[in-house]
Amino acid sequence: MKKWFAFTAAILFSTIVAAQEKVDLMNRKTWDASTQKRVIFAENSITSTIPFFMMRTPIMSIDPAKEYKISLKAKGEGGTPVIRIGFRCFTADNKMINAQNVLDQKGTFTTLAAKASKGDKVLKVKNASAWKPYGYLALAINAKEDFSDLPNFDIAVCAPVKIEKTGDFWTVTLKQPLPKDIPAGTGIRQHIRGGLFFVAPQVKADKDFITITATVKGHATSGYTLTGFPRGTAKAIFFIQTNATGLKSVKTILKDAAITVK
Image (cartoon, rainbow, N blue to C red):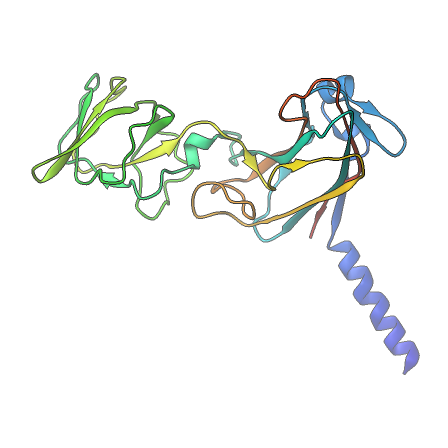
C-alpha cells in the first residue's frame, strides 16, 4: 500500500511539473539584442545603469486558460529606482494592441444621432454626458456596448473641445476633422491614447532586495487591469522598465527573475 501511495504521488508530482513552463529571465539569450548590449549580465544578477526597457525577444503565445506568474527581486544602488513590469501585446495576426485600441473612457459608449462626413468637426450623438474634452482621447468607431469590438483598430484621433446638450441629442465639437464618413446609428466610444500594459504597481527599489510578483490570466472585459491581458491578446512580449523616473547615477540590480506558466 505504501508503495502504491508513493507511486501515485510521484505520478501526480510529475504531472504538475510537466504542466508548468518556467522561463528563466536571468539568461542573457532570452533578451533582445538592445537589452544584451545595454544591460550587464553576471552569473546571478542583471544590472542596468540607465533608464531602459528590457525586452524579452521571443514572443509568447498567450493561452487565456493559463496563468502567467512573474517573479523577480530588485534593489537599487546610488538611489531608489522605480521599476515597472508588463507586456507588449499583439493579436493573433500580429497587430500590436496599443492603449487606444482597448483602453476605454468609462461610460462613454453612444451612437451617432446623425450621419457625420469626412472632414466634419461636429458630431451629433445620442448621449455624451460622460464624455470629456481631453486632448489625449480618441474616438473608437463601430464600437459595441458589450466591448465585443475590442481590440478596436478603427480609431480616429479627434479630441473634443466642446461638449453640449442640444435638445434630444448632444453636440460634440472636435479639434481635428473626421478622417472618414460615419453613418447615423454607428456605435462610438471615447478611448484613451498612450499608456503601457503594466501588470504590477510601480515599485521603488531600495538598497536591499525586494520581491516583485504579478499574476496574469485570461482577458479583461475592457481596458487595462493588473490581472488580465487586454482583450484580444494572443501573443505578448514581456518587459522590465528599469529606473522609470530617470534618476542619474543609479543602478538597478535584478536577480531570480522568471515567468512561470501553468
